[in-house]
Amino acid sequence: MKNSAFCFLIIICLLNFNSVKAWDSPALSSPDNGESVWTGVTLDWNAVPNSEKYHLQVDTTEDFNSPVLFEIHKDYISTSSSNADTRHYSEDLYFNQIYYWRVRAYIEEDTSEWNTRSFTTRDYVTLTTPYEGDDDWTGLSLYWNSHHGVSYYDLQIDTSSNFDSPVFYEITNEYINTSSSNADTQHYIKDLYFGKTYYWRVRARNEVDSSVWTTRSFITRDYV
Image (tube, rainbow, N blue to C red; front, side, top):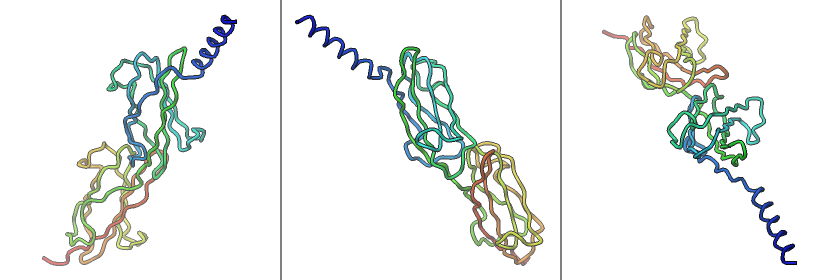
């Protein structure tokens, strides 16, 4: 009788043990949960010692079952959380979109639980100079800040706030990098009319989406 009870206890313990994930879940480090990020963003997590691989998924749905689901498996390198195996650069995301991302660690015999977070992509380009309503020369440079990880910036200039007049002008700059001091985040315009209000706007584009336009105006000087 005692042996039967002992065997039954062993079986219960084994069943409980097998129902629990023994492998640790990776702790997600950045971005923070719910953070506002660029459409090019690096996802970071902490190492789980002695793993074999990490499994990352990124999607616009909490169930990770949409047509834009992205996933990748990364080979474990070491216990350090500063190697390429514990991070992934994700780009060409939709603007103004909530994304969910999750990571798990695994070996051949076991897989950890998922650890999940979300972030929201930004939907703007910040214009720097000239300021709204500035009094400027008929030859001037227009500046804006970088939106990290895009492909292009579209700039439009016009005397009409609808950007539909005969003097409408537009140009596209190819993205260089995250710095706001390169040629891709500025443009020199000249031969403007004197004493005229001009409107200018900029948007960012990647391979799948475009941001909203950010618009300002300035007035050209009419004197020597």
